Image (cartoon, rainbow, N blue to C red; front, side):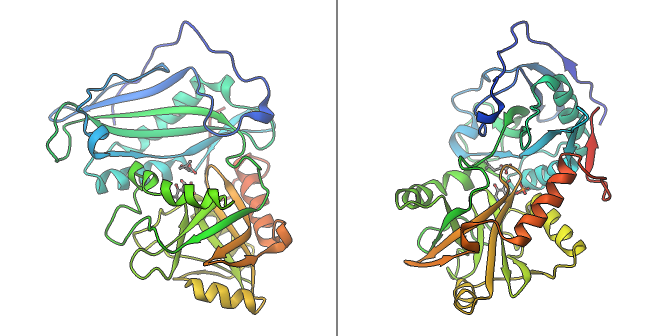
Length: 357
Ligand code: PLP
Ligand code: COI
């Protein structure tokens, strides 16, 4: 796509957080953002990197009323030699376009999305943290704007990217999480928007998460919306189980987000000689496998969280305690292999890395 990106630098750079051990997730925002506008009949125009700041949108904007919104999440990593690289950004750009299609939003050229991400990270180079385990999280977002209350696809859109220097997503880092398997609320159904990364999926999940948090759980594991029987995914992660030595995960059948970490972990596990299965997993199967001593590990996969080991799964008051509250061997080895690739500690044998400098 032939669209020049103008760069307008801030005159008032912010103070950067000095203690990289307390970055957390999504708390600090950098000096600049990328933005490009879409107008029906014209297409995408006015691409620019500009100082980070509030957007002026009409109170009648469709995003505010009907949630016509999609987003992505990916990271830029600081290598030990000081250079910077991103992990599979083209996959995020492709998923953005699939989400756009589901939400009746315009497509944005995938190579152009990656070009914008790279240029923004180059502009914010000094914001990419150095401490082990930290990264610069990028949040590409598309919203519908304009001033019309009719329920139909909007005529105007904004695509923008903001960045946050981030540490671990969960406040306790890699400590195993406690997960409640939810059998009353549902997140998504087949034919719905579960496979799109759209804001409404996340607001719909808040109530169950809040109720689970009150009972001491960190996360909710959703069951399928039709039979309340098969495990799907967690709020911001896909789920993997080790059953009888095999790595098993739910299929991407339309109601769960096809995670890029999920796809990468399945591939890496196979490379390590681990047998992998993508198939429906009934919660009853998990319980039986647990009782028979065959459910040995569970972990979540996602960009923000990377690999998140599960120490406890609870379903209707029954508890499954896993890996003695530690990180299981399979979670541990895929974590090492994946993060070595992401942070450039080993060779990129699969063409997953996009280097910046
Ligand atoms: N599932 C949901 C609902 C998510 O929000 C995420 C995070 O993006 C994932 C799964 C994991 O996807 P990925 O590995 O592409 O980050
Ligand atoms: C990510 O892993 O990138 C996510 O988007 C998770 C999130 C919803 C915080």
